[in-house]
Length: 149
Image: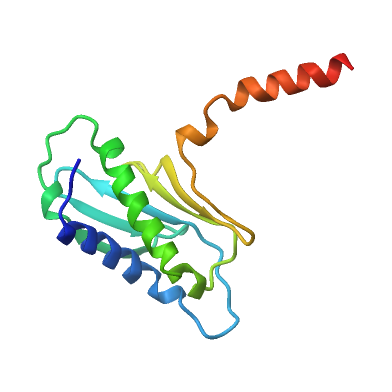
């Protein structure tokens, strides 16, 4: 799915708006993950914390009445790329969120669909299927080799 620069800007602005309460100069730290929820029929992007407190809401015009069957999987890379861009700009360094914390895409029932990004003290990990592909087989082979010795 291709989106306009206006859509990318709207997504980025919404994430910044949601996180502005966590930008701090003091030493208070908050424990939370950031949940992004999409409403395909209305084009809404809602952003919540762990307590289901709404942090931001916007309507993405390009997504209103989008008729694709696999909407979440098509929008996921767009959301991820905007989060990565904010991270590359150093925006998340200013937040008073305790690490590690995640940006999570959730469905209408607020069940996790995908972890978009994990922010940790040492590294920032970008999670996707390609990273985890074949992990089970590698671990099984490692364990088998270890037990045989």
